Amino acid sequence: MIIVMGLPGAGKSTVLSAASKTDYKIVNYGDMMFEIAAKEKLITHRDELRKLSPVEQKRVQAAVGKALSEMRGKVILDTHCSIATPKGFLPGLPYPLLSRLKVDYLVLVTAPIEEILGRRKSDATRVRDAESHESLAEHDAMNRSLLAAYSCLSGAPAAIITNRNGGLSAAQEKLLSILS
Image (cartoon, rainbow, N blue to C red):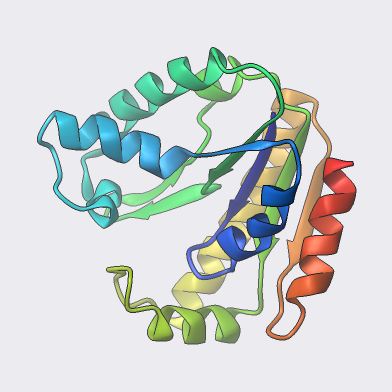
């Protein structure tokens, strides 16, 4: 399994679109969490996931982790390295979940903070809380720290792909080189 993570607005899904031409199956962690939480009537919109209590988030994460651990073949997990909640950052891949997965590679997609802020403002398809430059930079720093921790815990190599405005093809090429 290759795990691709990034801040909302870093362009993770856009970079990942290059993988649709490969034999990897792309699985979205947030979609899996939403299915479970919506079925349990905990939320009605995907962007409400981060507002669940940490106890509920961890319980739903555990259910997703079980499903992920049973997946076989070439899988790319599209997820977030950490989730900014009202009570602080929650690891996107807590150790009980990470320890169940066979991780081949970890990838963090990031971008300059100003570019992420601009992308978020122009994306009308999502319901995102307004964040300051400072809080987004803190979240990016948390993600980089967690990427290193996830690499240590899983033994998988880690890479950072910077997806600058106008640099999508270079970011996608870097991802494809990791997949090959």
